[in-house]
Amino acid sequence: MDFITQNILLIVVFIGSAVLLAFPSLARSKNAGLNPADVVIKVNEKNAQLVDVRTSDEFSKGTLAGAVNIPVADLISKVNSLDKNRPVILICQNGRRAQQALKNLKGKGFSELYTLEGGIVAWQQAKLPLSGLAIDRKRKKKGARGPHAQN
Image (cartoon, rainbow, N blue to C red; front, side):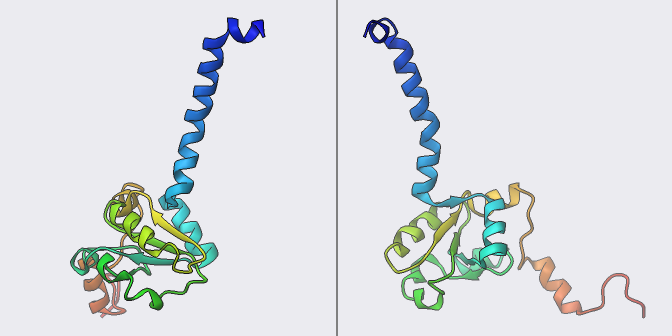
């Protein structure tokens, strides 16, 4: 008992440090956010569905390869177009709309729901590619002929 009374400050600092160290992991499990590397793993290992909840105009400026565009406003009405037995990763520009979409989808029978933490901004900061950009469309229009094709 003497130890506790003599070292109360040390004990408070220890408990406070433990809580602060535990808080980020508690926050992560609450918001179900995945960093870009975790998204790649979920897609490759669990065949996760990528759902871009931005507007169609934003979506046309580039998104993750394989993502489908279902704006937040249309998500509930189009929920049946998603496979509830596969993980769903929600994507937006910076993560806010994806968090709202996650709240809207909770309780709708999905096995796993996640967001791309930081959205498209975080994806680009991780130097990962976007598809659907104007330059991609130009390449597709050219067909199989690339810059090194012979005439």
